[in-house]
Length: 290
Image (cartoon, rainbow, N blue to C red; front, side, top):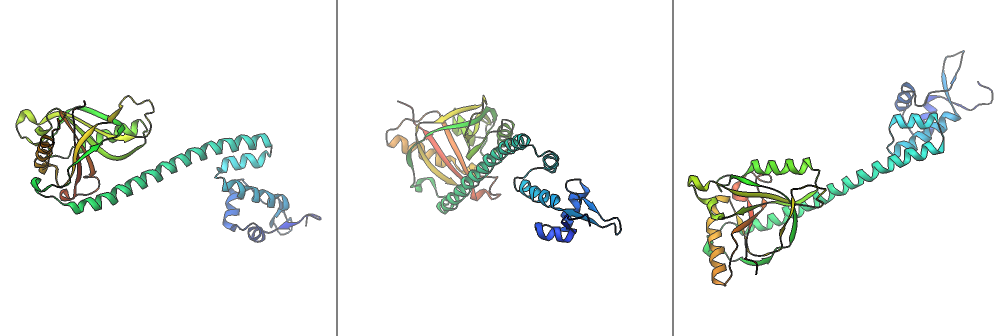
């Protein structure tokens, strides 16, 4: 057989290279690596040492996630400059995939931490406003948020799911990396969200979410950087009016002047639970800046 050439049947080649015969037949059918020698008497086909080297080379490239097209190109032309070019392209792709994996990891950790916090906060349960003990004066940090603001229906009987969907579309269209909970800013008389008078059903409502990078998006702004009176409410939004009134009373009793807007942070909302009694909302009433 072919003089002194070392020849390998498909089963032997599969064993040496630690691959399946099915994979070798696939490479053969797709003209990646094919048996080089054919016995004219038996019509059996055999691999040579060159194909052995080729298959090991293919295995190395597969570890780097090269496409079959690139592998075939590199097998046909073992020129180092071509190899260098292909590796640079693969490296750029790997960097992108690594960044995406880090974003996925960060978002998963962020969501898990929020869920852990929510489970603890749910233990607060809803209590009458006069029994609220956890009123706090907090320093809200400066958040960079992607924001959608315009007049819309804002009655607390609803969940504003259309505005949330609008915000998500804005995030996706601008390929923004967001984290944390969705927030809403009620500009103007925020208590009107609890009124059923026709003239009070529409208000200046802004929905927003924290973002890592602006990426040139014109709807990214700064939010916060203020002192606020705050507490957590567990339950449906329609039951928050007594909580708002209690926060206002607490602020007056302590000599604080409130601004004319409120911020609600939806720690646990409709996207996490279908049970309104398990909604968890942090309410902020910012003070007038001195």
